[in-house]
Length: 64
Image 1 (cartoon, rainbow, N blue to C red):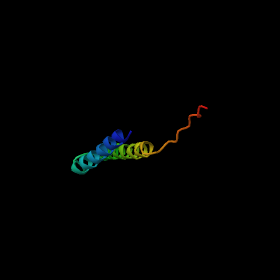
Image 2: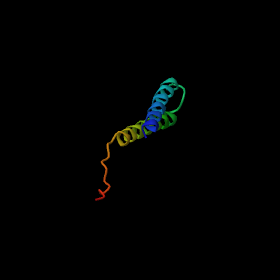
Image 3: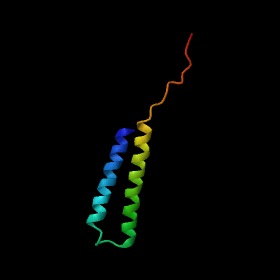
Image 4: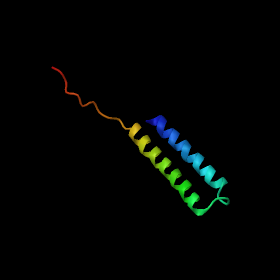
């Protein structure tokens, strides 16, 4: 999950760059859509990074 989280962060960074490059050339709807996609990629990255770095205890019952 950490790899997918890092890819999602990279997509968010690319989205920020593209949004800043085309800020004056596109309509408000496209700016809002690019901002929303960037936010979603960043949020997915945060969630997957948290899930991937969580240490889950061993819950298997011990055999006697």
